[in-house]
Amino acid sequence: MAKSVPVPCPTCGREHPFTPPTYPCACGAPLTLPVLPGAAPQLLAHRTWQESWVAVRCAGCGRQGQWPRPEFDCTCGAVLQLPVENVPAAGDGARPAVRRAARAAFRPVTIRTERDAVTAAQRYLRWLGYTHVQRPAHRAAGGGVVDLVAGGLVVRVDPTTLPTTVRDVECLWLYALADDATGVCFSLAGYTTEARARADGLGVPLFVMDLSGAPRALNDRAEAMVRRR
Image (tube, rainbow, N blue to C red):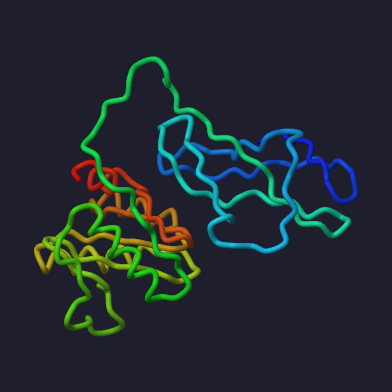
């Protein structure tokens, strides 16, 4: 369990203990947001999407992901945003990083609707280098297993607030198999444990998206897609 850090409230002057939240990194390691102990928090008057997320690098695998910025509700009524430091990846300084071909930074689409989620996945695939990423001309019977198609890919985008299920993964895989393509899944709420295990067994790349519209690879097959591009 993460150790608590002291949080001073700039409104009432009281100091409170706060336990930083821990999230699962795509590599499987727990990532505890490194809240700076004793640092002056910011009073939150108006919440914006951009300021609600913070970039933190996993010390285990080196991935940098976007995570919800930690907040604290003081008993005086003030809502505080807590400062977070980035953690260097394991082995930083031991050897120089291998430079890859330069690529423009991905520009996400803020997700407010189901259409936004599909647009975010479409833009990300184009950023990876897949061409002709488009919505299928004909939706599959029974609700549309596939939301996007590209060269050799059929893509499902799950914008719901419930984790994507094993049945969803299996349906996508069967659809891709019939189309001689690779099924790729994007989910806003993540995946059930069974769905992740089944996807690994079937070789289905899994991506998860946050509300800022920035997808990240969740399994080895998804990581391989990103590395190839």
